[in-house]
Amino acid sequence: MSNTSLPDHYEADGWENPLRSALDKRLPRIAGPSGMVIFGVTGDLAKKKLLPAIYDLANRGLLPAGFSLVGFGRRDWSKEDFEEYIRSAVEAGARTEFRENVWLRLAEGMHFVQGNFDDDEAFDRLADTLQRIDESGATSGNWAFYLSVPPNFFSDVCHQLQRSGMAEAKGKSWRRVIVEKPFGHDQESARELNEIINSVFPERSVFRIDHYLGKETVQNILALRFANQLFDPLWNSHYVDHVQITMAEDIGLGGRAGYYDGIGAARDVIQNHLIQLLALVAMEEPVDFTPSQLQSEKIKVLRATRPVEPFSKTTARGQYASGWQGSELVKGLREEEGFDPESKTETYAACTLEINSRRWAGVPFYLRTGKRLGRRVTEIALVFKDAPHQPFAAGTRDTQGQNVVVIRVQPDEGMLMRFGSKVPGSAMEVRDVNMDFSYSEAFTEESPEAYERLILDALLDEASLFPTNEEVELSWQILDPILRFWADHGEPEDYPAGTWGPHSADRMLERVGRSWRRP
Ligand code: BG6
View 1: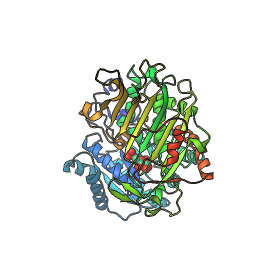
View 2: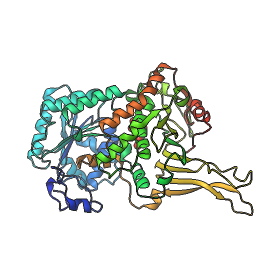
View 3: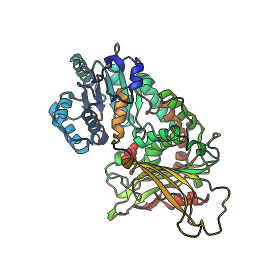
View 4: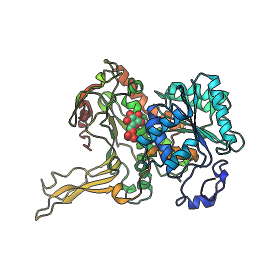
């Protein structure tokens, strides 16, 4: 039982307690009795994100007392080895302080089962382990299976979970599956994966991770748009000239060749993170924030979204070559360890999308992402049209640009509005100024890490922040024509590390009289 006074079975049988809803804002959201099995627990994601997030949840008191964490993997590990591995991952990556008593309590529920994904016996051992833990009473038969493995293993793992009976919930207990990206490499493969997963787990038990949706600033897009009167009247094609969605990273791909080579920037982040950001910025107001309402508004936008052609002019792609990242001379992608020296994988991708709806017709959405760019920044910028008339003398507005609203997703989380203002003095001269809202100045509360939020939501059966199978397939449908074009035409253009991407990306906007923001 959690330390709220609500009944244990609240999450287990979906019973809606009206009191809980009313108090939701003030009650900490604490997961009920449950455990999690992680497949791929020795991988990079688990080590850097999942395990620290689980510890942080425990440390914040948001996991149930007997929470159990079970790892499944090939290593020949004892319980102690597993604990030691998790402890070092937590010490390196947790955001909250390390507290021995919290750790010891969490460690009690840790178990490791050794095996391969094609090994029936190993999965039977895993099933016995879960049953033993359930019998001790702390988990009540409630298990989440976290698939932090490449998609070619989804099928094996799901079928093993089905064969060994673990996929099936008994009585009031629940079984859920949490799936990491990449969710396929095109629409067809995504559909196949969805079919495999949905043949074992009903869609309402499937939680597909897009960790951008777990970020505070991304959820704030909804607050900003739907809690205020200020923005909505301007949020349409009458006032918005175009939208730029940027996810720039300064890191390279050293150590990630196995995952990234052959995948590239568009599949890695445009298909998921950037298209989700577009959906949240462009969608209509949902009736409420329940999963079905939110998802159906996003789906409407995605159905109306198309890539703008001709792709030779409306898209760009590049690959980082060696260059200066700050004061460090870094390698180009083709020299990075593990990458094919002939690799054609793009590390920069930009495209132009349009949304065929009353609100957005005629407003291009420019999406771009890249590795080894000038600096790390993710932002959404709505760039406004010029005022239809300007009663100012020639030359007095020369330094004024277009009005911009920027949602800064990270770092320096916040929001910025840029508009013209009179320069103090006797003349009427107008210059751009910034009005800046910063999370760190406005709030004392710390934002939880995206994975903390999403793991907790999955344990609480709150699916609003998880894309559905349809959203995933529609996102591929938007991107697939561009990927096909790229596969048949040329190769990515080199850009030196530490710059803002290939020249073709600049030309892509110059051609239509616009330019990328330098965030
Ligand atoms: C992941 C991508 O989904 O997001 C990575 O696979 C990328 O390539 C990462 O580096 C960025 O996440 P964040 O939260 O640091 O912006």
